[in-house]
Length: 300
Image 1: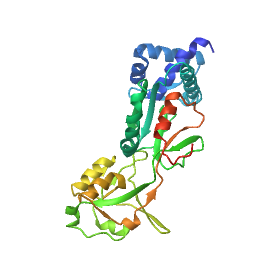
Image 2: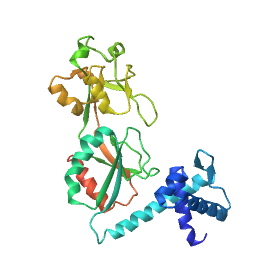
Image 3: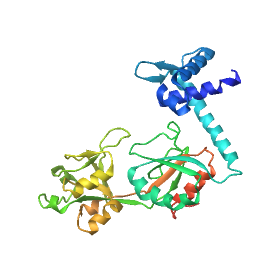
Image 4: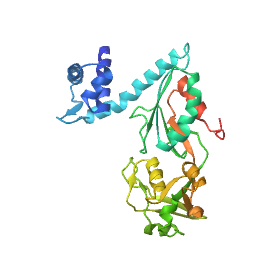
């Protein structure tokens, strides 16, 4: 294939990833008509249709999916190497995209990054706070954060927080009308505020551990959120029981606005871990952020 086809390939990657000519054109800074021309020229050159187009959507064909999976990572490697070479003479620079849960972003990422970023004005950070698990490579994130270090073998993990204990909390006003639950099974008689996991759309099952006993309980109640802050606010307002990290609830527990229950059943889970593809070249900017986020107990 002719060497001048690289722009066509980059255009195809953008459309396949965004599944939209409009968004891809905006990303590349070209018109939609010019982008369509590039894709048609690439398909004609290769003799195979790469994209299925309808009035509402664009998606890769089988041939397009194969091309996408094989060439997109290689272009990312080229971009990373060019950045790495540039950093040999420059200060740490570049945009680092991180996906993390809302709580991890609020309690770990931002407090640590706020201290180090003023020292590196050429580093830009984009944090996307969401509860679903993200494919870093497919969605072009540099790093992700999740509870625990048990990830795919092709990922490198770095602990960035101590272990986290979870608590079940309710307001004094709520408990004035309801009995105290003594066993996880008693939650069936309570209004519980649910968390919907965006990764697969299911409601999070509350986890419990006491000695060797481990159980998960599906709870019910009048409210469902996909973030933890509204769960805290609803619990404070007396709408029901919330399942939260102890760190998040502690200030309100100390002031008597929330009360904990089932404390002997509440588990402690592995803390937050940063993860990224093992084969990825670490730019100086990424190294700066990893060092800033690394928990003191993490072995270097």
